[in-house]
Length: 156
Image 1: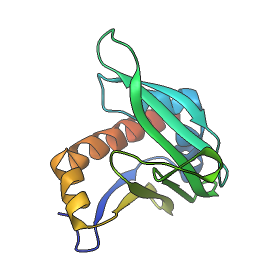
Image 2: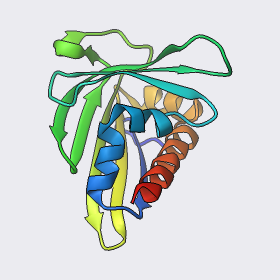
Image 3: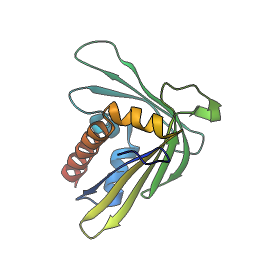
Image 4: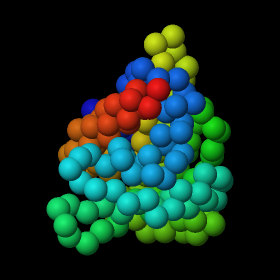
């Protein structure tokens, strides 16, 4: 359920240490394997993990052409701890007009059993948050995180 402030959150415990989960996020060929719910294929175009760096992925279903998925800018990068990116900017802090404005705050917290991985997604308002939820936020982001967990746990 979206909050009044326009936030959606999904959290999972991944049975792998933050270093492994971070590697799955920070290596383009690894990110491409879990970032979009299967069977949709992901192509990582940019993954410049620094403030102002570009983050761009494309997706395709079946054998069609790759289509835009995410085009964003990293705001904060703390290896093995936190990633913050937004779709309202692109690489180099360039303003953008996304179809859905959001800022994602991803955290990696060490736990005895592995990593507490949380994705908190901020929207301009509660209406945009509801729209994202209706489009399948929990199912889509939850599935991607489950795929991340499976990938990270196999990588150990």
